[in-house]
Image 1 (cartoon, rainbow, N blue to C red):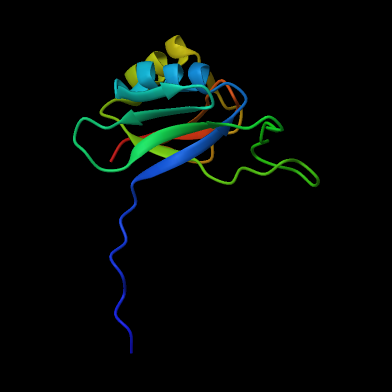
Image 2: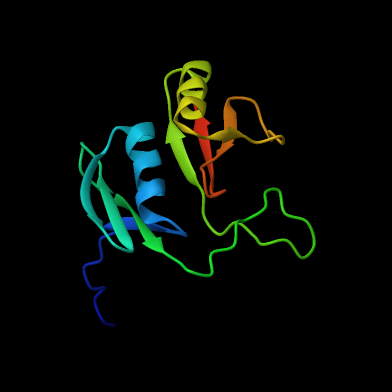
Length: 125
């Protein structure tokens, strides 16, 4: 039996047609520091450490549809963001450029879309 090598998740990467605009949205939403902002790539770092959030330019980016129907581009990842108050956090998200999803699947969670259509969930514990 071989031992498992050391593996550590260092970040999550979202594809986007405009790295700077999407990174700026999440910088304003989360308040995370911008570590890298260069053509085609941007990275934010969490103040408490842990995995960062990066943005990679994708020329052929296709906006996902949620909830998806037959033949729609599928969401492949979404972000879950813990908040103290859904109404306050939701108002903040909208002020930064997010859009509230029409479909809300459960109480205690609100689904929003970032400017490129990636869904993210605000939730209270």
